[in-house]
Length: 396
Image (cartoon, rainbow, N blue to C red; front, side):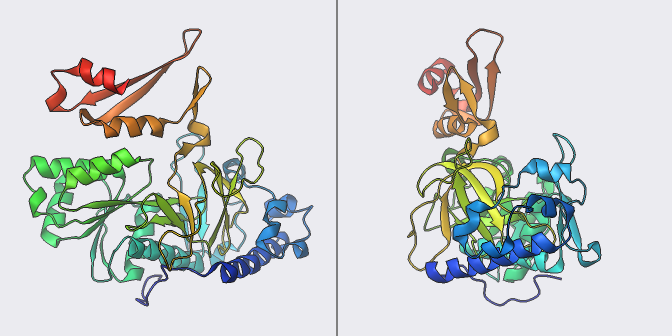
């Protein structure tokens, strides 16, 4: 089982020259394996690629993309590249828009997953002697078990409480004195609100929130930290099932707004979402990731659909991970209203920055008229309920 060693985890990464060399070696080995492993999907996809031509990360753009539809078309196990007898775990997406996306892990995949989540926790300030209150859902969803094994790998005592059931969550947080909590941003905000209503907030010891699995803005961060008070800090963790689950990248307290990609395992690039052409550092585009070390279900140049940009090297002295900006939205959730490109998260940023707006809102698009209309419906806080027009004018 992964996570039984409490050796220190690497939160620094390799310097650029060493890192590029390692990435190149791993990329070449991955392509060679995919081309010869006998998997029908990869045999066809790489038919025009000479594996010996892939020798460094500079050759990455000669490789084909992988997209989510590929995983759906190969459902359930058509993209597994190792014998099933060598695998030990299976997870899946919810399948809300069709068949679920299934991902499979070997024991080494699980060890890597534990390692990168341990890095993420440590980067946020989690210590081996912490009690980690893990409020992510367990089961087929990757969130709960990803952070669970990461916490154990780091040396934490993990409370596998899962999501929901605030009547259980709050007493556990109080009685066990957990300093670190992992959950979705919306659930973290709900827990703070319920704790305040019940007069428990001042009796809780939570200082660090490891938050992800749903989009959230800087305004939402401010709202969550204000709701918890007592110096609580909220940090973004990024991942997706098709890559490995949570633990692909992590935000750090001394470099807010930047996600550190654990690029010895996950090779990132930014492309123009319309043309597929690579974009230079600093330009906004679609995040593409290649899994350099996965065994059961690796992917080449997976188009995540997430919009971000690669930040300049630097950040905090001594760390060498590739830094990307926190995500601004998704390629597939961009709304075009009267010729203007709008991402829902940009709207959330405005709403969550307004002191009179509550935590819940809805974006309504009316296309029944010749010129589409976008309306935002937001709840007001109790203190602003008697002056809705003032808040509406300001937000508009």
